[in-house]
Length: 326
Length: 253
Image (cartoon, rainbow over all chains, first blue to last red):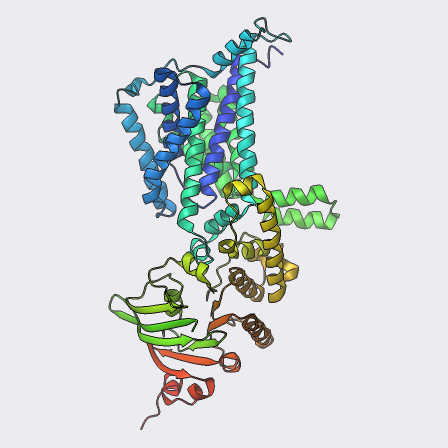
């Protein structure tokens, strides 16, 4: 128990969930086929706004984090209205530029404390630990200290948020709006002629991605005590995109799996620190060569659904495996 | 009058794709647009559906100007189309393709979709039912759960028609629906187009298959090099000297 609940592991679990939320944010924009690299920028806006609100204004956390998301959404309106006209690589470059602009602005403002970043951000786990002490569990329960309980409650809250977002994304994908997204992703022109206001839905997806990224930023800020402009540089934007590239972007499970793997990988590869980046890069190259659609695609889901719902005959199984390896 | 095309001109730089085109489509009519390749037939469709804007002239649908409207608005008004080179949503099932077509006739928003409200469930059931009817109408009811990309060519063409019909159009534009079809498939298509007409839908048909055109069109508009060279009932157009010249060339004097 003591071994499993050490702060290091608990923090990794928190990071995994935060990254999974970021994975959902990229999934939402990619659902309309928009390749946006601005999610790191939106994350930083969410992080700074909610951190500043709790630090300087004393706004409670549960208000500050949604406000951070709203601020990211507002920024998405400013950047999104001109850029959603762009497609493919042009949108990627424009949003990548946007992320850098945000970073440089944060670097130069006094309120954000420039390159030094913000420290001493009220910690979610400390706050929850205090709450636990107040309700009379100062000694902890079941052999767990107050600090562990605090951390576990943070994880619980994060997991609930993630669960809600996954539920949202799953329901969305089978709804009228989700079908409009899928149609735009498949063929924007045909979608428009079929009666879909493509501009509206692309903006909607862009906003949702920004909001979720902003929420992730706010949560991250209140877990790590410290944020600086370096945390949101372009490598972060690429990292978020990689969740979708590795896991797949067809279904929401793809970016989720991608974020879990890519967050765990650096920890697992800690013994080979010097080679870490190399292994990381190597895995991606292999992925692109053999499974460019990502680990989980719609076919994967169909394959497992079929397997679970009916017991296929041996010849059918052969057929299925032949099809999936193709 | 369902559609009035008035003095429509479309210029791409120095190229006159269409020059002063006039014609009308009456309610319930099938109008064929024929002419050699590059005559401007698809450009005409693009102008009517708002994909392109005319350089000058006016397009009226039920006395409503279409010029400057976005394509999705025009679809909402009741004009749907298919494409010369099939443009389905490949990774969606046949049924989903038709459901996307019904988009502008349904309301379910983001929250309704996420919370599965009663209104949303009812709408979803109705839309699905109607979409299945359309798949049956075009004859691919059995294939509702196959991916659009996995369907054979002829069925893809039919699915595209079903998708267009899902937007409940009053005017349907078919861009070479019989392209690449064999004789029996074309015969089936002819029956289908007639069935659609019986539902009260006016149709403009671009087609190279003269047999089909002569059989089902109430009126033909013949284009050549962006100009209308003849208009009238099929028999009249067939014997028109300008049409014969455009298709067969002129006899040396």
